[in-house]
Amino acid sequence: MNAETIGSARREELGAALARVRSRIAEATATAGRADEPELVVVTKYFPASDVLHLASLGVTDVGENREQEAGPKAAEVASLVPQLRWHFIGQLQSNKANRVARFAHAVHSVDRPGLVSALAKGVRAAAEGVGREEPLECYLQVDLRTEASGTEDPAAPRGGALPGDIAMLADAVASHDELRLRGLMAVAPLGEDPVPAFARLAELSQRLRVDHPEAGEISAGMSSDLEAAVAAGATRLRIGSDVLGPRPPLR
Ligand SMILES: *Cc1c(COP(=O)(O)O)cnc(C)c1O
Image 1 (cartoon, helix red, strand yellow):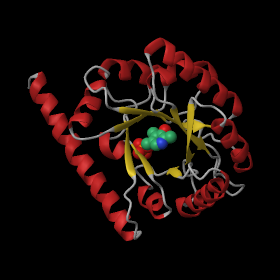
Image 2 (cartoon, rainbow, N blue to C red):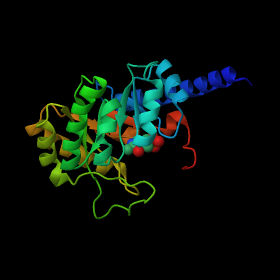
Image 3 (spheres, protein in one colour):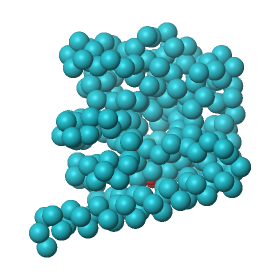
Image 4 (cartoon, rainbow, N blue to C red):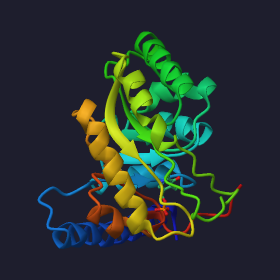
């Protein structure tokens, strides 16, 4: 097989997986009796820039990444080919990487502490001067949904997030910066727990947030294994990786 044949085989494979995920989303939306279909963010972490290009050619508008050192170069590699593609940063983020993320990210879903809020605002200002960024950075506050009953944390996949009691303070912090735009909440269902009650807690926190921040009504929740539960609970952004791209290659 030559490179072109391999490329088109991969594109077909991604197209078929994407169609399956889109039909699951449509079905879950109908089952939930919702008129609005959640938006899909395809999580491309661990997969090459060539897959990002295939996905864009298949109509994907939003991709997600969880590590700056992987996402930055990948975004730069495809920027001139797919300038309209929106990059969502969904992983734990150190404040000293905020400047680099603000150069390419449309949104950060993992805002979880005040120090990161000010670092991101500064990063957006620097990106406005450095690379002509014009848009504010969309921010989702990541909530830690674990309770005392939740399973112990998997060290290979730290879940992170702010405590529910800190959301109001963080929301005010984001809203105080013109460089940032508060969109809503994000969460990962706790390991070893039924996602249904966890996403119900998230929906309740979202309602509470909207009392003071009516503009922050988005809910980013739902991964490959629990997208149906997330759609039923009102998620408006789904972050789907392995069911589109395939199982993750072993950690490098
Ligand atoms: C990897 C990742 C996803 C996608 O998970 P899949 O199970 O591959 O669909 C979603 N959200 C976050 C925060 C992730 O790190």
